Image 1 (cartoon, rainbow, N blue to C red):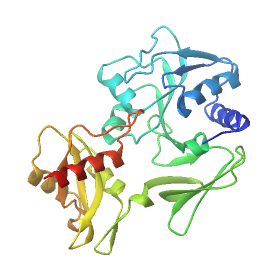
Image 2 (image 1 turned 180 degrees about the horizontal axis):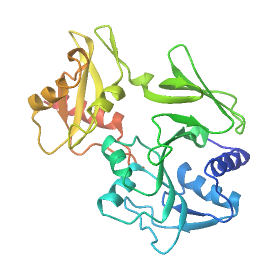
Image 3 (image 1 turned 30 degrees about the horizontal axis):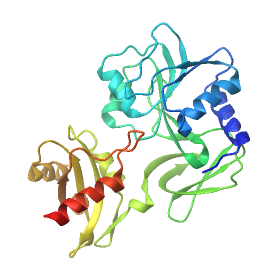
Image 4 (image 1 turned 90 degrees about the horizontal axis):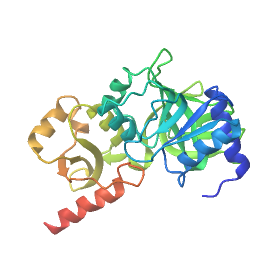
Length: 294
């Protein structure tokens, strides 16, 4: 994907305006600059003529304790590790978290921070985020709100469409199913991932959201071929031990039987992308290979 420099600059200015950042502020770079999220942190700082603080781009970046940080961006894995290590984050005023969904457990931990934390929604095509959700503090919300100049809509299948005033793209149609209301939305799941099981359409992400916090290991749902249902929902877990019956019973306790995972597959570890997200396709391919080898 190629971006126009003017689009990247416009995106940076929109973000700076939303978070009220100017030349008196500081930006923390803790994401690799060869990817769009890290590159945009540099451009935001340059466009505002502010001060850039550079730290390591590891899974637990060093946070300079002697400097006030106005704005930082991290992936969930980084902030999770920092909180677990009891690193003092009080010198970070505003933190955006993107690249993957914020789990219920991490969300609860964020409530104890003085830092104002935000989830972001966007993609490489939109030059990072076009919508923001406050996760803690007095403006905490369950909704993603569009940035200035962004108009949201949905198609016939409730998939989000994006129109912007600041980018060259006229309209972008996504495969993300959302609940849209007054230019804000709640993410439900991807249309590509929807499973038709015996005529019942199931969103794996919606089931994962219900299971979030129920287990102490990472998991995700996907569909496999089934003689009985056409497709059936199954669960992939990253665990050292597997008690399939116990896991299914726990799932049944909170999920209707017709939407409950029918099987559990353990693969430890999952396959991850370079940015720390679960690579679902590669992990599923590993599971399928494991099944075919049996």
